[in-house]
Image 1 (cartoon, rainbow, N blue to C red):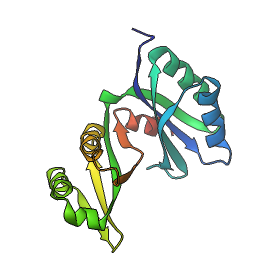
Image 2: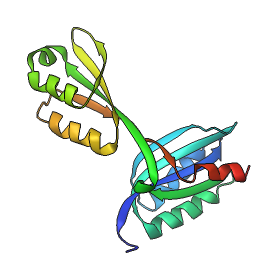
Image 3: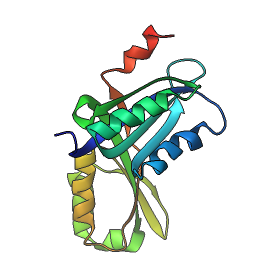
Image 4: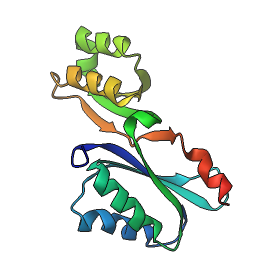
Length: 171
């Protein structure tokens, strides 16, 4: 069904010009679309940047948005993929009071269960990093919610799509 919203990743390859991110963000703002995640980085192509924009959107909306993004002068290519057509990875950082970490066998058990990596320990806080799929990290976060003193920062998602080689044909 075209009006049903699904998670899509819009990938955009562009030149790196001041103001371009603002113009692209305005496309979503005018349509009242909420961006779930946004990553902007260099790409494997010299002088070309890659935007990965994750959002919940209908097929009809995503097609219109991609067409409007492609009209930007600095854009070389833009395309959208459903989440199941991507290979993705995200990272989450956790901050836990060190005294609670030392006193709670439950937190230690979760850290072992999800293979969370220790980053830094000081007298106030202990910092951990977990990498994996959105679902794996979501499960860990749900189990950690019982501990209100655990803070986290969820990173943007890094991903490859099946169309990543497409740009090489146009350059």
